Image (cartoon, rainbow, N blue to C red):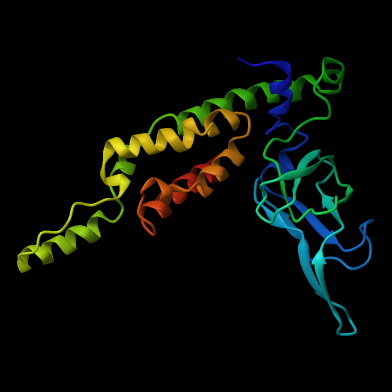
Length: 257
């Protein structure tokens, strides 16, 4: 079911934001609190990607300086963007949020990382603010909402049979052939992907029982990033094969989206 707030929130392809939705926003970090003087190099802000506020510079005289930024300047070609700021370096604990176009943002004490949210929103969610949304953009929001919801549900609900075959199977098959010649019986593969039922249960646990499927229905780009970073290894998938394949699958889906 779609409501007005959800439709306004789902402005991923609205005309006013199309230049920055695909990661074209930029940011520059400053040691001062007013976005002047010593600063970092330009940071390309890909949607949902975590960036540290720590940077270092070498002054013309040769002296160096390093530390966490006190302010950040965004360049978004005037499009309204939503940014989150975190107290850790991995974008886990939100302590600040800013919403706006190209602006200088004073960072709260303790901010160590930040990222651009996947949901590009218009200012305000109430009925009074809807008068600022053109009919063309509102139609774009409705289409975006429907398309993104359908895409997210299609990519998170089914579980591909291809992922029920261990990516290391070919390697083990070769080893098994060698063992057979030597008269050795190899143990059964323990990787979750080699057991269809365990694979389905792991998929259900990490994507649905965790709440990811519901939490990111309006925010699929960040949702895909969460799935890329999910601890597939903890669910019994073999490292450097099936874990990497899972990450590659979700990375490809995120890129395609």
